[in-house]
Length: 204
Image: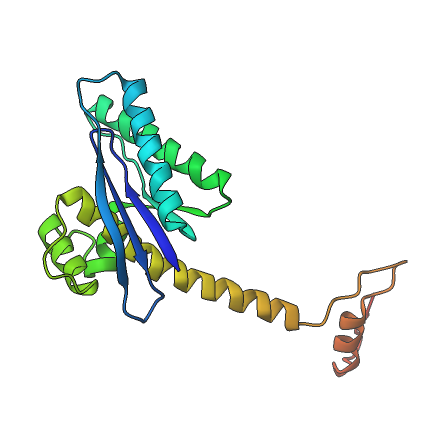
């Protein structure tokens, strides 16, 4: 599975692409940061992000998209920019028919390091190790995007296998006969046939 992961931000937007499946070695495809000048008008900055993001999608053709979930804090302007960039990525993915998943920072930290409260240095060190990199990815936005991609591959792959197993189990079960004209279904009749009768029991 090829995952394109985004650590959204208007000034710095981390983007990482990773190949892999749960339980096997992960491979870094590309990592980088999309930057926009803080002095530019917001519409111009958003167009720059969109253009750059489209190039990432075209270049790598991901199978899934992971985005860090936005949380509100005291800096309203930062939250607004982050939410706007998140919307751009979602629109691009939706138009291409790609599944989108949002992961919280705590989920990402727990998946990568085993500790939902790990600091950035610990997460970066684990990303470097898991991807077999010669040096830690920089800046932090790039490392965060890669951690997000790793989290999605591991969590998404497990969830996908569970969903497939549930679907296969449901398909293997014999179809139930709907109740028609007051008569019980075939499954219900069979169940009653093997039940030993009890004194005074009444079946409807």
